[in-house]
Figure 1 (cartoon, rainbow, N blue to C red):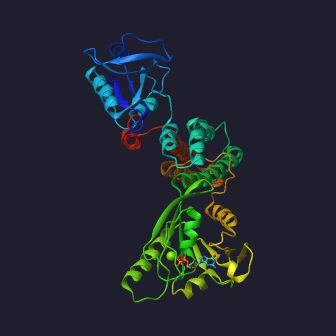
Figure 2 (figure 1 turned 45 degrees about the horizontal axis):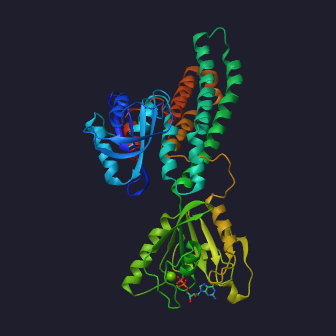
Figure 3 (figure 1 turned 60 degrees about the horizontal axis):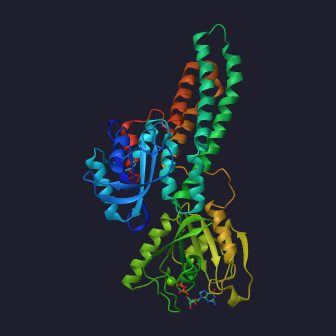
Length: 450
Ligand SMILES: Nc1nc2c(ncn2[C@@H]2O[C@H](COP(=O)(O)OP(=O)(O)O)[C@@H](O)[C@H]2O)c(=O)[nH]1
Ligand SMILES: [Mg+2]
């Protein structure tokens, strides 16, 4: 990348709207603004201007904002032209900027420049994309916290603690006569243990955060006619699946995206599990199994009130319970049994009594789903973690794991080395030592103009 290039892009979404924003960043911005609007406006003030092409034609008129370097999003000179939200007009403005020396920005290039100029660290830059992509207000809020630097501050504090510990061990290597190994190990080892605990906690909340942004999948399975499609429609608040008294109505997997506890959840209604000679239904059952095996949670539905263990219920359907599956047994049609909504535990599984058709016990169901998926709306400092962050945290934890008291006593140099690698892994989360390939991969997934 040559940072001397001036880049330009349409920053608003495609399509027609009240406003459309074109922006540019780079050293050529002041001359670009002068060519387009006549004079350079005061910094960081909204000025109403006509936007001209080089041959003097008016392309549009609107607000002009100018942010001289370094006090801008990218750290370079930036301008924003707020015109009318017509794609043809916005394209004309963009092309004019290109004629005047700018080039089209690549996806994420504004944020990449912000990162390279130290305006954002890598986790914050990723949070910009996450904020734009988030599918619930809860995920958006969490991305915003990362963008404000809360997550990075946490990581940085850990890097500093690990580094302090490492420096202590390196001191012992350099001055072995001054610092007795036993005293050093006794003093420093508790720090290592505390760091390990903190990392485990952070990792747990990172996994939690990953669910917040990527969402969870819930498969609804059970015998034909127990009310699976009725429940799907209820949870989705829409008539998505055909409900009928005829067993074997649902044959394909029906997927609906909804929010539970403000977290995106994909609900999958499946063909009823039973022995059948109908080839289409057989295929539906095969697909039901596939969905069941990959779901984060299985709602195993029955219209019986009997508290059977989940594996026995699966056995009745001629199925084995998928290994490691989290199962919620939902007993439907309590209206027909004269029962009240209720949540109980039996044989290590959660059982819930509801009536999908009458809408009884659905709040309890939502609450239970939130519990079992680990997405109950409690945590105040949750953050949206990416797979990259989780991998780095795991790497750091893996480096700290073998650093026991014995090693601290007998091999301070190995302990220091383990601590150094743990700090590097943590530091990579906020961009330390990031390779060009990694940066390219991260920013190429952004939208153009961001
Ligand atoms: N009494 C009663 N009937 C229900 C309830 N939920 C669903 N049904 C009925 O059970 C039948 C089968 O429902 P459906 O959702 O198609 O079941 P599926 O085959 O499991 O998808 C339909 O006639 C529904 O109206 C309920 O809570 N109570
Ligand atoms: Mg059905």
